[in-house]
Amino acid sequence: MSRQHGYRIDKARVRNDLAPRKEPYWASLGPGRAIGYRRSAVRDGTWYSRWTESEAQADSRPKYRLVAVGSEVEMDYGAALEKVHEHFKKCERDWQSEQLGSPAAKMDTVEDACRAHVENIRAQKGDEAAQGAANMYKPVYSHWIGAVRLRHLSGNDVREWRNQLVTEAQPKRRARGKRGANRLFRQFAAALSFAKASGAISSDEAWKKVGQFPVKDGNRPSYLSLVQRRALVAACERDKTPQELAEDRASGRKELLYCTKDLAELLRGFFYTGARPGELAKAHVRDFSVREEKVTLTSAKNKKGEARPRDFYLDEPEALEFFKRMAQGKLPDQYLITMANGDPWVNEKGKPSYVRWGRGMRAAVREANRMLGPEDQILAGTVAYTVRHAVITDLLSEDGLDPAAVEEITGTSYEMIKRNYYKVVRQRVKEKLARRQSL
Image (cartoon, rainbow, N blue to C red; front, side, top):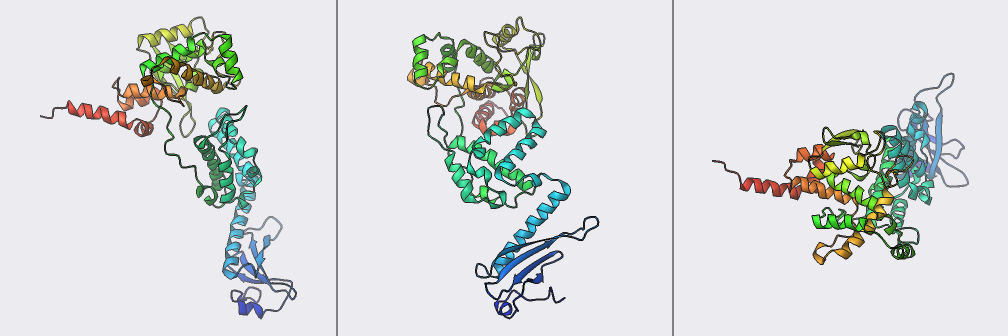
């Protein structure tokens, strides 16, 4: 070894014998990598890390990156070696980013990672999916954790942010429980995983060790009886008095205003098709075929975010008549289900009005429960998506369709059927086996 790289600096007694000097004593750790120790006559010794580029740039020598990692008092040789290797990994990532222009070069803070993830979703799934992700990152952008550098992000940072996601109800804001916090946490973890895959952060320990809140049952109510369905529609169709609307506004809920005859029509569409609410809201008149007695719905609920159309056959006479009525007098490019004034259930950007029918559903559940007996009460937490669960349950049980057929017409997957409707499918199988005659 040359004199510059030949020093043994891993032993304290050897370091004590070194002469103080400005230049560190270096020990090679492989090509382009070295750990250094600088002995001072007036202060404690200092550990250094030096990483050198593997390739030279045009008309220049390979550049090196040198940094002090700590004093001899703070860490022994073993601890200093760990810090030095961390520095090597960071230098490798930064250098690769500079050479290849990878996303890591644009990600320094947690907020950077979230915004980069949104743009990646935009490229893969489109503007609507990207906007949905961006909305879920608002609790990051408005919190100090957004400014934390990825290289300094700790489990304590993530835990404190996650715990603060659970909030109490406020005058203009609903309470957020642990299940809602978990949905935001999953999106947050997805951004950090994207940053790790891009080379902007080396470890996923900070968020994986914290994890989501342990919630025993995150499933929404998944069934509505025929009595309950009719009560919900009736609750929407009932005319509300000015006094009722005023009392609802005064209570701070402002939900009864959205429990209208328009919502009753939308609910009928949900019950007839079992579609995801947003899918039916975005359907156009051209998607409905009287001759073929079907409505074509488009789903993007898949890993690639691809638009996948599917046909739901309207063999139920009432369903066919309903969609004929919805399409009557409209042009092919107009929305299929609209309000009485002609407005669609989407905004000017084409995004479904989730908030509008969400508020209406909460009011409809309250109104329906006033009309229903104790044995038919609708569970709190019932939402528009609950209708889809109820319809799929019917298709698998009462209507006796095979899971493959249900998968085809509802746009769900076999994995989701197995996970959420296994009891229904199992009961059907048991009934069929009981009627089986082998010999």
